[in-house]
Image (cartoon, rainbow, N blue to C red; front, side, top):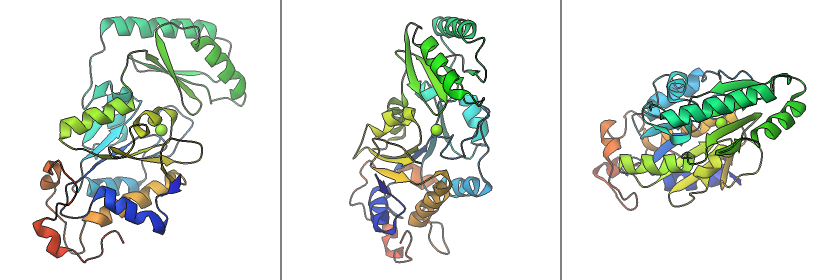
Length: 286
Ligand SMILES: [Mg+2]
């Protein structure tokens, strides 16, 4: 993986994301560990003020999406309304909250009951019940490795599930649920776009990275192996990438193209030199 913020690689970012006047790509972000620092408490962290301010500027320049394993309402609350397109529950809740089908509700409730019974004596385990999926957090005690073993042993006995490991969390999904790769493809189709820059830090994000070029420019945030060809060294570098993306399209003393115009870019990103090209030269994204 190459560091996307290394000066040597900023040209690759510029070629993919395009500059002022070219049709935009979708900018899509996981929330926890990408737009906000990872924290122990399952409620999640707020974004830094700088992150929030940069997203407000970016939303005028690109289509923006947040794609989280959290429930849609939770994702919307944490992203504070500054990201226009919100996807929750790994893509099950695409752009709006989705009523959970009764059989799924019943299955998830059953899994939770079974897990609660089996993990009753294990300290530091917390269930995040998203109604259509379940997340078992186990990093809350010093003895988290013991909790991890117990959680995996119990979850492996459930039927009809897909288990997706995260950072001190195990996600339990119905086996036929969409994943984040499905979510990105659906978003692109809905928005009439062909490509997305995607930032993620977790195992569930690998499904989006797997789509690969030319559809997805994958950026893994933080240490660890990933299918993504690009990385940021840590969550604190997210702001620097957002700033670079702003710089590609926001002109000195101007705003690039009008915000609404950027949503309706043509399907082809390549070679579309627009009327505003003559304003180039201000050096955005250098
Ligand atoms: Mg994450």
